[in-house]
Image (cartoon, rainbow, N blue to C red):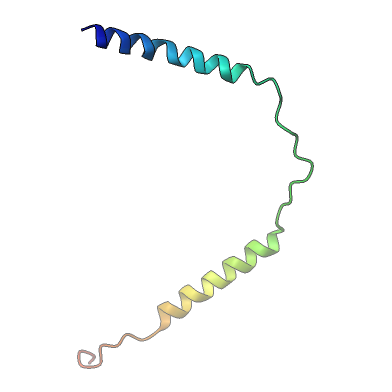
Length: 69
């Protein structure tokens, strides 16, 4: 049973050790200066292309020639 006691002790101490390492990093992350945002025209263009593809595939005739009446 000493192995399980050691394992439990390590499992209890490890998060504390990792938290101290994380808190030791005192540098703050850099502030982003430029955040490009795509215009709404690009979204409308993508929506129109997808709509056209869906309508085209939906209107294609099926190839069931021997079962058509």
